[in-house]
Amino acid sequence: MKTAWLHRYAICGMAFYFALVFCSFPTTEATSVLGGAIQGSRPPALVIAYSGIFAAVALPVFARAFGIGRLDRKLQVCACVLQYAGMAAIVALPLQNGVWHIFFGSFLLGSGNACAIFAWGALLTTFEEGDVEKTLLSVLLLTGTIIALAIGLLDSYSYIAIVTFPIVSLLCYLRTALPGKRAVSKTRTPVSQTSYPKHFAVGLAKTVLAFALVSFTWQMFAGTLGIEPSTKEILFAFGFILSALLIQLFTQYSPSIDLSLSTRWAFPIIAAGLLCELLDAPFLAPLACLAFACAHAFLETTMRMQAIRADQQANLPSPEIMGWGFAAISLGAVIGELAFLAAEPLFIDEKTIVVPALLVALVFASAFLSGNPERADEARSSRESCAIEIVDRARMMAERYALTKREHEILVFLLEGRSHPYIRDALYLSRSTVDTHVRHIYRKTNVNSKQELIDLSKAMSG
Image (cartoon, one colour):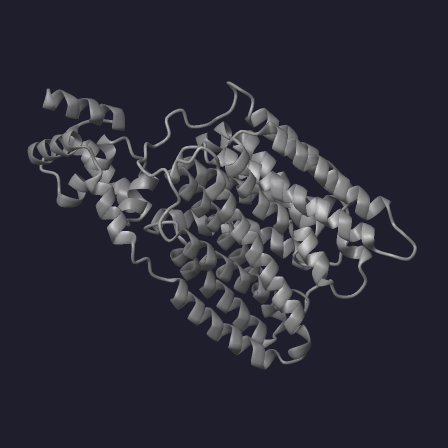
């Protein structure tokens, strides 16, 4: 609760951003609202245009070449201008014989959305590691609430909501990024790495594959679920909220936030939704929709967490690693939707064949994405990189206070000033396990905080 209040403007701004993305081209019905001017199926060019993929790929390149900062108010202002220009082109510039304005407006709107999420992600890289998780969890809860209220109070996706959300998000960002006012980390965790992580390209490729599969699955059944569009929209809003609760459990009990573990949680939920859809029972359709929505929001959010965490640990001057991670998510979504449009004529009314095929694909994809062979090496090198003085102080304290082997390992990281999420990833433990060991260390050493623990170790060595 304290973190939510501390970062309240960032939470509100990002929630209105995600609500805008959903309301302008709803995942539940892509031809409604701004996409409603396109009759029938969506042309692939429109999918590429409103995805913002070109801007998403260009931003990390520009960040490296021109030094885009982590607190760039100009980028967020530019995003807001592009969003309004895109909506104006789509809605206010219709031509009697042509739809060029729809493609052009979708391109502007998608580019604005890509700039906005890049700016928000760059801001999040300045937060403490634990605060990033809590902030995004709060964003999901608020996003689901905003969408539900927009549906209930503003006659589904009213243009009032679409017109007001960009400026509200911009004002929240400006308030968050004001010098002396922003709630960012004053002392980021020191790291020795100052380059791209090992296996970075492989991680991006896996991210694209995972999200493409999720996107394809949702597109396959978004239009065939026997539910009214308004009901699907409400279920998707509740999916955001349910995914926040799932992420709370995931961050509490998962030993790390990485793609392999995220898919182990998300893919079974998608499989459950597929089975509900295969049974073709009216009362199971809402459960299938809720499962798809929850898994979609859960996987996207955890992958964004992973991109932000990788950027924090890389310690580069610009947020380019975060940008590449966000671009991989966008690319996966585009590939999944384009694959669906290409394959759609092949499996009309062939659900009994497609569902088992997708289940098999989920199993193989989960096996391919699972495993992290470099995890043990990373944990070992991280421990070996600890200063000799800190290792000696930790050994003295472990002997004097009868700490266990695991408590001794965690003590070394605490004396370095590392956060609980960092320790969780380095030692491959769940957050609840780390919290328990830290409490035991505090109790045995009779201290109440990390700083007191560090002061005690220095006093013992002196």
